[in-house]
Image (tube, rainbow, N blue to C red; front, side, top):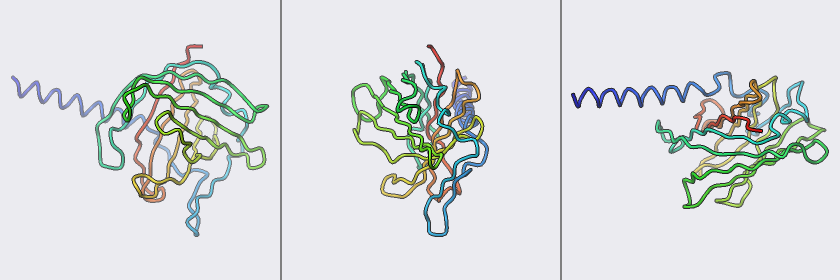
Length: 206
C-alpha cells in the first residue's frame, strides 16, 4: 500500500511539473530579435509598437508566481508563492510606466522581497526598455528591450549568469488584460534553446 501511495505522489508531482512547463509560450522566442554576424543582439520594433502598450497594467494586482528552484542546471523543481503589485500608470507624459512588486517569499534573505520595474518607451526607435531592481541587490539589471506584436510582447538582453554569457527574454501575454501572464527564460546558446525559469499570472483587484 505504501508503494502505491508513493507512486501516486510521484505521478502527481510529475504532472504538476509538466503542467507548469506547458504554460510557457510555445511560439518561436527570437521574434524581432537576432544575433548578427558580429555577435551583437539586434532588436527591431514591431510595426504596431506603441507608447500605450503597457497602459493595461495601471492598478493593483495579486500575483501567483512559479520559480524554477535552480537555473540552467536541469532542474525540474518549482517553487510557488504569492505576491502583490501596484502599477502607477503612465509617467513622463506617457513615455514611461512603473510598478512595485512585493512578496513575503525571498530566496536570498530572511526578510520580505520588493522589486521595482521601470519601463521606458523610446519614440525614435519605437522600442521599450524594461529595467528591474530588487531589494536584495539595489542594482538595476541590464534592460530587456523589445515591443509588442499584437498581445504578445518580447523583450531581450545579453547578461551574465554564474560567470557565463546568456540571453534573457521577458514575454508578456496581455490577451486577457485583467489576468496577464509574464514569463522569463534564459538561453546559454544565443537563442537556440531556452529554459523557462519564472512566470506569474496577475489578477486585477482594482
